[in-house]
Length: 311
Image 1 (tube, rainbow, N blue to C red):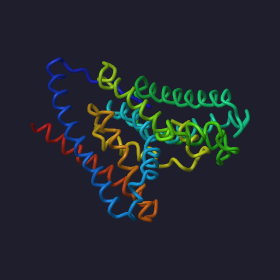
Image 2: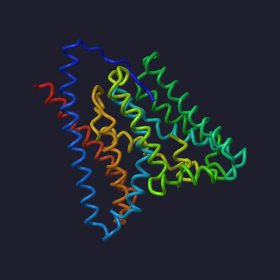
Image 3: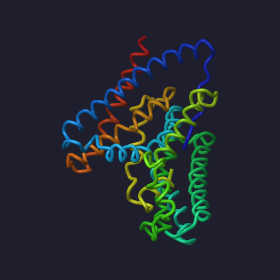
Image 4: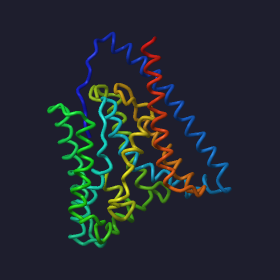
């Protein structure tokens, strides 16, 4: 992830900006939530009876949204500072690949938890180091975030392909990881992926809302859920995550955003994708729809900014 230096306001300006920002976030949250409800209503009516709102499909939507939500929390922090991170999907792949390579060499799908924990730490360390390097290049070397993360996108994916010769890591994810984090459910009801996403969202939502740092301002889940590294399966993650964050009210121009908005925004691509699949629409159209939604969201954000400047 990358960040830029904060703009320091005096007390009066900060109070005025904060009040106006809270009103905009509230209005945008209602607008985004209304869009989500419209999508749910449309697919509920258009889909065969009992399919879209079935327990199975709702669980699938929540599980698919969980991975994007964890990514979206980090992206919210980046975009709210006026930055951008285009490398998020490639870093997810690289993190999963390096963690999986270790596990494969220490038991593969039969690996025990000690090896799995080390693999998880490798994945987390990879993402942390990569994000730190990109952050230093932006904050200290003053290289634009777009250029840094665009380069990071290609570099991370390239390294992952070099390590695996372009193929998914042989052997798949360990059964112990798949059966717990990947497919397991808390009390047999709530998928563990969703639990992790909720915990991450709550923690960093509180940091953003109630700390000075917040005011100024991953790969293991994918491996467990898809059972493999899915090197070719994350090409549109950056598009989906950025769309979710912007739809949730975080301005691409920086200075405004919330984790709650991101939570709502994340479910729009998830619901859209699930609904289109049920209706038998080619999955390629999902990318078209998400791209159109992103452009529309930025356009609406620009209209809000112009209205704010006039007032």
